[in-house]
Each structure stands twice: as C-alpha cells, then as structure tokens.
Image 1 (cartoon, one colour):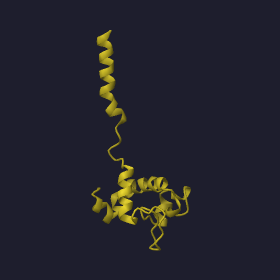
Image 2 (cartoon, one colour; image 1 turned 30 degrees about the vertical axis):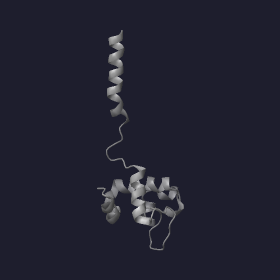
Image 3 (spheres, helix red, strand yellow; image 1 turned 120 degrees about the vertical axis):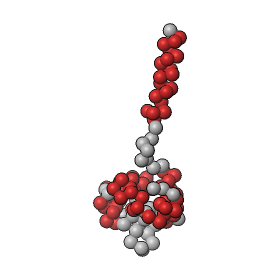
Image 4 (cartoon, helix red, strand yellow; image 1 turned 180 degrees about the vertical axis):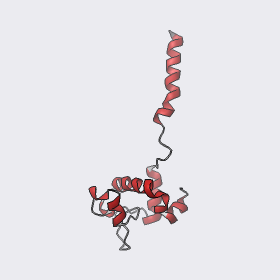
Length: 109
C-alpha cells in the first residue's frame, strides 16, 4: 500500500509543474507594466494628443481592430486589465513590433 501511495504522490508531483506551467508565449502583467512605463510613464489613462492612447499607446484603429470597443471607445478610457487584454491580441497579430522602440528598450522579442 505504501509503495502505491508513494508512486501516486510522485506521479502527481511530477505532473504538477507541467499541468500548471504558463504557455511560452504568455506575457506577465509585469512585462506590460514595464512596457507602459516606457510608452506612457505608466499612465494608463493618458491622452497626450499624439494620436495614441492609454498606457500602451494604442491607436484608435488598432484598438477597434482588436476588439477594444467592447471595453471603451478609446484605450485611455479602458481599465489597465482591458488595455492589456487588447494588447495581447495585438501582440499575437503584430508581435512586439507594435511597440518597436519600447519593446527593444525593455528587451522583449
């Protein structure tokens, strides 16, 4: 009985890291915060009048094309969480090139 229990515990312990590992393409909130710090000094509700909005400086057309309108008319009116959700979609289609200078500056590819 003890051997069977030990084997079961070992099997679960061995599988746990695989079962809960994040996908290799996942980006942490911390990374998005670092990018926003570069793009907008970390001000998620910023509108500087340069044609890009919010913490990640997203254009209105890119915001709309990636489903942002379901959260707010413009990125600077959306929550940080919603801006990140849309940014994840942008990253999937455009890669880090959507934020060329700041992604290079913070070292993401």
